[in-house]
Amino acid sequence: MAKIACMDKSLLSKTAAAMVAKGKGLLAADESSGTCETRFKTIGVACTEESRRAYRGLLITAPGAEQFVSGVILYDETIRQKADDGVPFPDAMARKGILPGIKVDTGAKNLALCPGEKVTEGLDGLRERLAAYFKLGARFAKWRAVITIGEGIPTHTCLYANAHALARYAALCQEASIVPVIEPEVLLDGGHSIETCEEVTEATLRATYAAMSAHNVVPEYVILKSSMVVSGKTHARQALADEVAERTVRVLKRTVPAAQPGVVFLSGGQSDISATAHLNAMASLKGPPWPLTFSYSRALQNPALQAWKGLAANAGAAQRAFLHRARMNGLAAQGKWKPELEKQAA
Ligand code: 13P
Image 1 (spheres, helix red, strand yellow):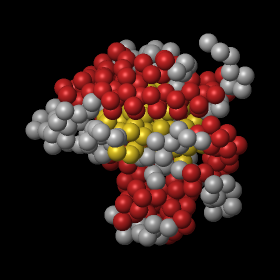
Image 2 (cartoon, rainbow, N blue to C red):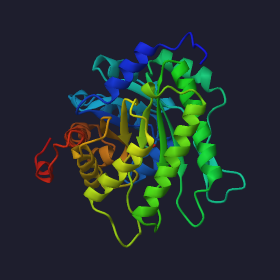
Image 3 (cartoon, protein in one colour):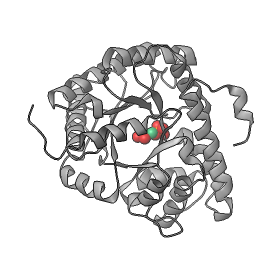
């Protein structure tokens, strides 16, 4: 394999290990401004650059968050914004020992000649953008591919187009000494069974890792952000946590190299408690060779958003709500969560 002069292997391995440190996980706060608007509408708050800054700021600076949060995934706008005291967000995070991360894809677009399927874009100019993000403090990145289950889909075309993009993104990240988080998300929307979700998740991960290997991506410096194997949202039989855990871990063990430093999960529209219970069930299983933890957006932020309501006076309550979910998920990542703990305030 060709030698890459600028790839800082020691930084990559230090970053990856810190991301999945015991009892910690990632906060995904990288919603595009459009998604942010959808979320803010639910609480009747206007989505402006300032309201987004104020909201992200309260999450990032929540006192004590560093006990449970190893890193925060930021959006391009957010990595350039400042906390109330004028400190740039990446610096405020670094002072607390929280790693700044950055979403670098430019979104999932319709895949040509493949009705109902998407391919994620953002490779053009990515080398230069990664160099700029590294200077701003980013030490890991995220790229999300979207796989939809439906009549006749996903197709091989969709799985391989997305796998190819994920692998090229991951290679560029490693070259820039930024740990790539690869996120092939199998959507939970639909009436499919959990068996179908398991098959599609396995095919997705097989395609993804075949492409990663073809592009010389080093497994030791990659974090997988996976969806869980769950029943389709409208399927009659909703599998319970133990089944979700068993099926998800089985698929991961079949496809993810043991050399990888860790696997994190997205919440994907699960309820806050389900996302925690599923993680706890997985972390309780003996056998996975990697730490399993969270990288949630909605399942960490929902109660904080409801508590905030766009008012500075509610910032403390919103931070407490966020810290509670972060603590619950930090315990779940160690298999130490119990439903009774939900009753205790943060
Ligand atoms: P959810 O946890 O809300 O699925 O978001 C995670 C994420 O980062 C999606 O890209």
